[in-house]
Image 1: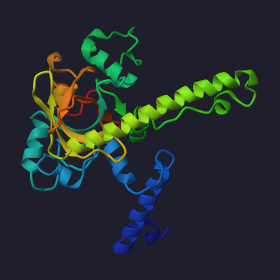
Image 2 (image 1 turned 90 degrees about the vertical axis):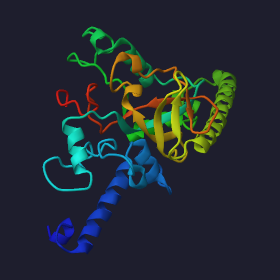
Image 3 (image 1 turned 180 degrees about the vertical axis):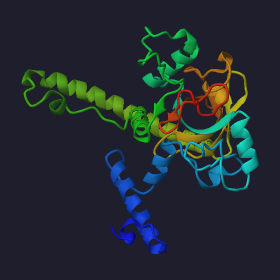
Image 4 (image 1 turned 120 degrees about the vertical axis):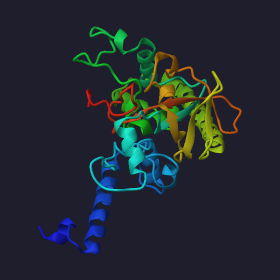
Length: 302
């Protein structure tokens, strides 16, 4: 291969070509999960829990998960804030991190991954033995919060918003479906369509409500004790209620004692809003396991 094909020589044009190839490869990889359209990158980035640009302002590199992205070196270099970053990494605890949360209505049925997370946090890892139904093999216990990829988070949001429609009967049962069931099918389809339409309408209303209050800098307050548990750093991803927020790790169950665990029945207020909402935090798939004592990567499990 020639150097310009690899894009690794000193010619700036080759670097641009290499960057363009990576962009196209990424677009191709994600095309099976997200339709191509303006703003798709922003949606995927927020679903993946990656902060950038002005969203990083006023925060340490570790609070923005830069060490998980291999964006920080602890053995070389000299950069602004290096001493604070190194000290926090080697001796301190990380008490806040930027992470994605899905905002839902308090009447929304909680998806199974968060029901499991609630049970894990409520029972505690020491109470979950090898014979427990929560055991995932080799004595391992699932993390205290769901670990979800960007496509996975997108699928969950789509279902919550009513964007994933049920299969037509001919697709679900095959062409050999009995004609005698046709009248029942029409009735069931009509009822299902009404439910989907209501879900979609409610989803659109919720998206508008969240977009109005979840502006960068807005505080996230737990109604249980009136304490601020996080701060919005990025508006909702278009077409979703997923926001990036700098969250206290103890209030999502990733740090500290049992008294500060995340609950599936939580109620929050965002910014100047007066409507009670619920938040579903999740760990991006690229995060390592988090040490509950330090808020850093759990080296023993990593």
